[in-house]
Amino acid sequence: MIGPCDHDYTPHDPVMMAEVLALLEPRPGQVVLDATAGSGAATAALLEAVSPGGRVVALDRDPEAVAHCRARFGHTAGRVLVIHANFGAVGEVLHGTEAGGFDQALFDLGVSAHQLSGRANRGFAFSHDSPLDMRMDPRAPLSARDLLASLSEQELSALIRDLGEDRHHARIARAICRARQEHAIETTAQLARIISDAVPSGPPQRIHPATRTFMALRMHLNNELGELSAALEALGRIMRPGGRVAFLAYHSLEDRMVKEYFRTAQRGCICPPRVPACGCGRSPSLRVLTPKPVRPTEAEVRRNPRARSARLRVAEWIGGTAGYAQGRQP
Image (cartoon, rainbow, N blue to C red; front, side):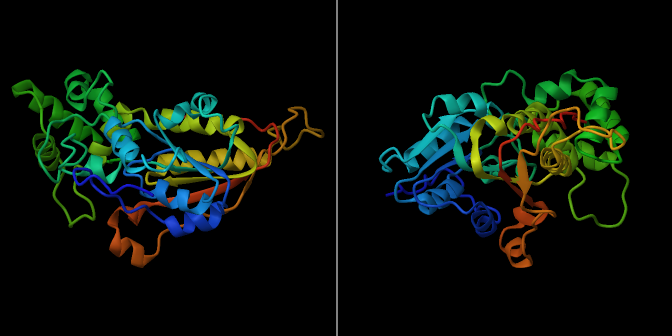
């Protein structure tokens, strides 16, 4: 029996869960990885799919999520193992689980509903004023406040350009540096106001002017692309032959990394086209099950606005020696 949700922890509506289950095809008795447990909603759905006899290994870097999930799944007789770890370390984590490999794995990237909520008070969102923290793991040494105080104008501009993909990156960086000369930028409301004042007025936009900067700071601070790169590199060590892996991305850079990795691993050989015979010795290691990313239905987006930007990609691990050839990050 799964325990009730902690009323102090924001519940999470998992994105495209029906599509994830249909493509992963978990069956009773199998071992599944939920690499980003959050509130445990996807963990619960995966556990139901592999019962009886199956197990779920659930990871999260946020200690609040880990504590919540350990309480929620405390009555499952060991069928859910909750581990405090970044999903980029999944290769090392596997050694301590006695699982021997996963039949399915789900990586739901991005931020949890709880982290975005006012209950967490961690500075991930500007819909409510809170301290500028943004650390997914509070044990990390630097907060967003520290980052804003230490980066040069050029570094800030490049960060907002590369991770936030905001065309106003130079204006925003300049405004932040001017503002911090007068007073420390300590709260989400302060930062959002500085950014809004810096961005030229125009037609109403779908997102708030500060959205991309907040996202860029969070991704940099938590090394989100680095963690994804490490997770992709580890697939060959954690997936059983015939196992399926799903990635839910909400950012174009993350989705591009997954897409390129899948494409390279499915192709196998990386020799130039003009070479008459393969010299690299690589063979395909996976089969892509989603040639194009699966997108949420309009009904789901109305019910759960977080799903709006989601892209789901799924592949089946077949073994082979393609390795991780993508590797480069912005």
